[in-house]
Amino acid sequence: MESISSRVAQVTPSLTLSITNQAKAMKAKGEEVYGLAGGEPDLDTPDFIKDAAIKAIQEGKTKYTPAAGIPELRQAIAAKLKKENKLDYDATQVVVNSGAKHSCMNAIIAIVEEGDEVIIPAPYWVSYPEMVRLAGGIPVIVETKEENGWKLTPEEFEENMTGLTKMIIINSPGNPTGAVYTADELKALGEVALLEDIIILSDEIYEHLIYNEAKHVSIASLSKELYDLTITVGGFSKAYSMTGWRLGWIAAPQPIADAISKIQGHTTSNACTFAQYGGLAALEQKSTFVEDLRAEYDVRRQFMLARLKAIPNISVVEPEGAFYFFVNCEKLGMKSVNLCDKLLNRYRVAAVPGIAFGNDSCIRISYCTTLDVLNEGVSRFEEFCRAH
Image 1 (cartoon, rainbow, N blue to C red):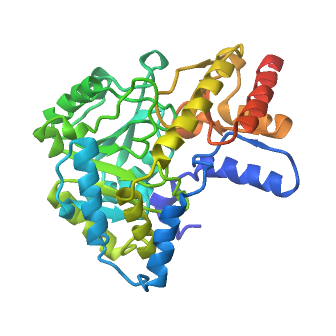
Image 2: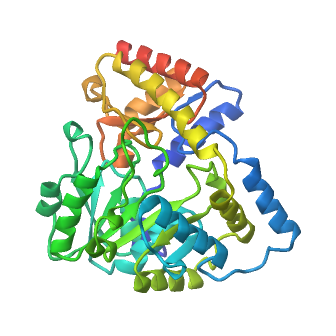
């Protein structure tokens, strides 16, 4: 339609949601589908978090809150950041949003002006480029290399900087690759950003899902100069299995936090009130849920790694974080959409085309499901690979 704005018209729908919905539709018809496309934990939200939200409803905590969130939750997030991330934020520098996706969108709107360039390493989470376009910015996609663990190098960053570069997006642990940047790697990228005062949007939503000897490092913790340039994004969806609760947050220098709060005041207002009390319980009540989730996912990760490495004509980099494998299928000689379409319709296995993440030679496989489903799904994927 001619009445649709050009910004929205150029945005492409989410392929990850499209594949997931297609698989769900097939299941609704009674077809057996092995879903390896999902981006959310399969475990239920812990009862103590549910109970806190239910209690809040029963106590009438169902009205508006300040746009930036209830003070108790903002304070609890600030305390978490100090303890776990070595980041000293005042509660006023924290803004609670309707999910980390909303946090990223608000941050981009707050910083990016018409024509500004935003550097996005590929493979990237599917929504980053579209968010930049919606803000009137220009996504500058920088392809990373499999041999570098799908991580951006300082040289690649600097080569793609121009006088229009306003922001860089760093996602560690990363979706779709599971890549985790070390402190030294982040410091090297930060030094490039400091050359031109480029704002760093650090998406750390998978921070608790890290394996082997890898450690999560918040880039804002590495120096006062980087702290002043960084918007840190986190949330409850992945570690606490709260995807549907839509609860995330940003922490940033005061002027940026105030700007994001202002944006939120004129768009969504506050995040869901009683969900915020669930988030507060997640942070304040002692529980082994996060560690149990991480341990369970590590079992699945190791199982999938061994199986995938035995399949001919594909390659994988061992993911150190999140819950995905980014599988290089270039030797199969198919574009990723065609590959995933055949895999779903002929072998009943749902995976996400790599083109959604900026790489048409790969597909993303998630291990957010049971070992039985993973076993059958990867067996069918192996059959597909051997047949092609």
